[in-house]
Amino acid sequence: MEQLLIKVEGGRRRAYPVGAPARVRTHLGDGKLVYGTDDGWLAIQLDGETRVDEYPAERVIRLEVA
Image: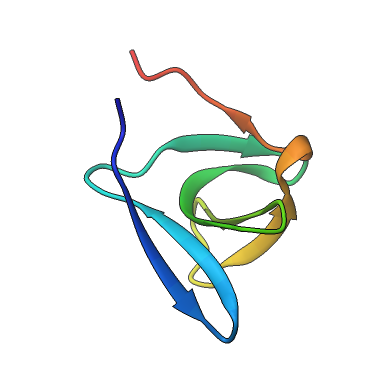
């Protein structure tokens, strides 16, 4: 079971994964999960990028780590 750290920032709840970040895939490429919001968005940092963008959770696929 994964552990999450819950924080409230700007009136929104964010859930940060504790430990190694989950690897995910979006329509723009692969990256790591930074946090999830209480209104259904996931913040992703794509590989090779420094910025973090939010994507609708239903459009993000978790990758299995071998």
